[in-house]
Image 1 (cartoon, helix red, strand yellow):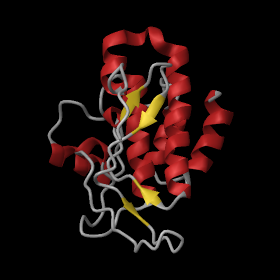
Image 2 (image 1 turned 135 degrees about the vertical axis):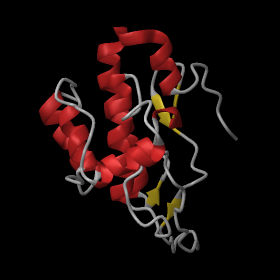
Image 3 (image 1 turned 30 degrees about the vertical axis):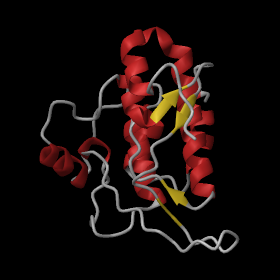
Image 4 (image 1 turned 90 degrees about the vertical axis):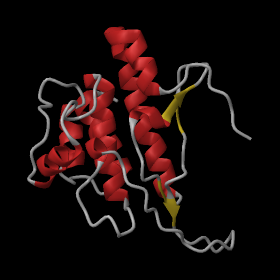
Length: 179
């Protein structure tokens, strides 16, 4: 059973309600990181993290959804074999890697960095550029400017692979930007 979320997805909600959401953006940043930390703790890789993958509920909480590209580790308790996460993120959220390999927590964290950028900047990384060009930027370690963004420090570290877990990212966000 799917629950209806009256405010739609986070990307459109932010676009519609403008920059007056400064305090709320910080709350959502924390919630989206916590959501990814929870699914990772349960052996799930989402594999398509973008701002429009979070719904906004009646209390304006961000709820992670759309797991159709996800994969998961084997679960003996539920007698489930492992399932590879082979979904490919959009170019602006895609960590350059062999697309034939299973997605990882690290590729999810890279995409989460792009989602944090999108949340605060109001657009995807390298908005307006062609997909292959975006991939080239990321492959050579060229990222959008983040110094003026509240979440810029943690966003850049996501793109550079400096967090092992979403929980590490959360702790760094608590220290650096008061999440």
